[in-house]
Image (cartoon, rainbow over all chains, first blue to last red; front, side, top):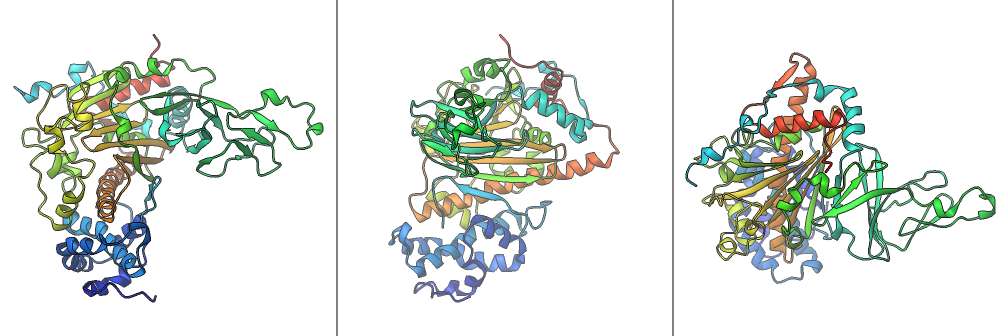
Length: 115
Length: 413
């Protein structure tokens, strides 16, 4: 799939765009996390987690409801870390132990459209 | 807190000696049918909040898998909230097809019979062909509705055996004025899994499993050194409903970069807001019915409303869990994470998504274990499961469950 370029300064996330950049819901991110090898989740976490503040300092400049394409892509990639960090920082494995696989969960933000 | 163990309520303190409970309650289709008739068609059932329909004409549709009920909840022009079965009086179509909206009328998509927002039938096309239909008595079938603390309860009996306050049996008084309305924003998490619904009810009624099953998720944050099996404290009971106090570790300080960043943006719903607590503005923590012991490391009051609800008020919001049987071996869990407001920034959206993932994973742990439990039950090698002295609320739930199945249990005056 063709993607717009990431914003300047965030090219370090380019290797993760194909994995996380096309996902639009939390459940899609949850399922992606379950199917990835732990090593890939760790590489993503290692690249991004220490630089979250830098990412959001950049995103702070934009209207959250009208992100330019490059920033919208950046934010989608970054939201992948909400799932990857559970695997890396909490479980030490991609899946919740003993849970069915693949496992899907419906999650609805009532009255708000998340990215 | 002179001696914590004095407040660890044991089953014997509550006169509950039913330590062995038949597995059949969890595996039998016959028991499920009795639960439908004797529990879910008699008890008041929570289905939402009045602030989901704030304006006249606002409606929501809820499906209750246990009773196969499709329910429309609507606020009328008169401001009153009503509930109806979602079924056209003509030939039964579930006519309201959007999950929520605002309307002054509902029009059946099959033959265009039209109903007002108060459920009354307003128009029948070619009405001359239905001379036998009395419009005045052919509205949508009403369901008894009442509310407490902003929560909408329905009762599917022809005539409820008890009013909602009688049913709540004092739990409502203990929580009088609790500030649920301060936390209007919610994320709903819904999942279905192959297990009996009572497996989940039980999981939320004891802390014994927290240090084991949730060793990587909850344990570091909530299991204190002085209470390693997370025994619930100061268990209170109100008819079949209950509340127990749970501690947490205020010094929990995750050394993990993503989680640390999240905590700095917006505290998770479950994390104590120490500044707010010190300033006396920490939501539920200030309520006199909550943390009666005044434990300094208070985490939550886990409140169970019979038959299928658990509510956990926290400093930054509350968690609401509901467990619906679909049949004896399958159930639906609905979790709602309530907080003060929707995300206002991308930082807050990230933080709330992270909290959502963390909260969901804990529930997934409970559901995964409940599924394994069901596999074990259905294997047939055991006729009973065991409830310990440290699981008093499981024994209490079973006692009241049995009473309901026998036609008793409602809190008549």
